[in-house]
Image 1 (cartoon, helix red, strand yellow):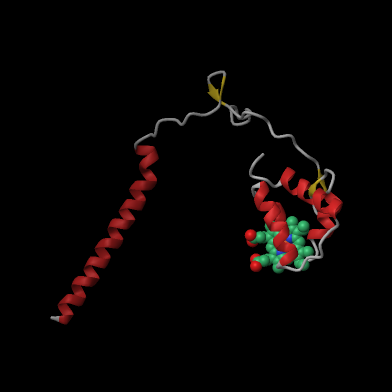
Image 2 (cartoon, protein in one colour; image 1 turned 90 degrees about the vertical axis):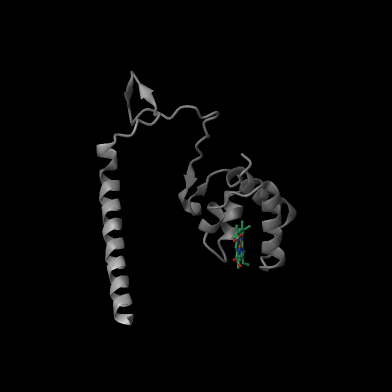
Length: 141
Ligand code: HEC
């Protein structure tokens, strides 16, 4: 009895692998057998041009040059303050990858000072750092 059940299980496993394999094969063939309608793409003279600029962006983002001397941070006022203040304990990548709200940046800086024991910058420097972080790594602009 137990043997028969074991065999049944084995067969159903084989059966399942075969149907998975078929699904993979058919799935792979799908786009050829059933051509999917073309996606809406940038058109140029009626043809798809992969090099054509993307359209429909409301405002092009202004490209800011990166300062290689200061960890590849965007080169605007405050870059030096952020570089020296924030790279002491961790990589600047942790800063650059953020997209926080302005309020969240205020909170994060306070958290670095109060919990992580970052030496508190003087008022002017702190403002420059916050302006800089909000200018470049904000979710609000
Ligand atoms: C005294 C050390 C220290 C300094 C200086 C410091 N940090 Fe941090 N920071 C930390 C530590 C420790 C963590 C990791 C905390 C954790 O994940 O528990 C961290 C994490 C972060 C994070 C990730 C937060 C998250 O939600 O995971 C951000 C963003 C950040 N720091 C920004 C900054 C900025 C901006 C500065 C410069 C103004 C700065 N840090 C300076 C210690 C520091």
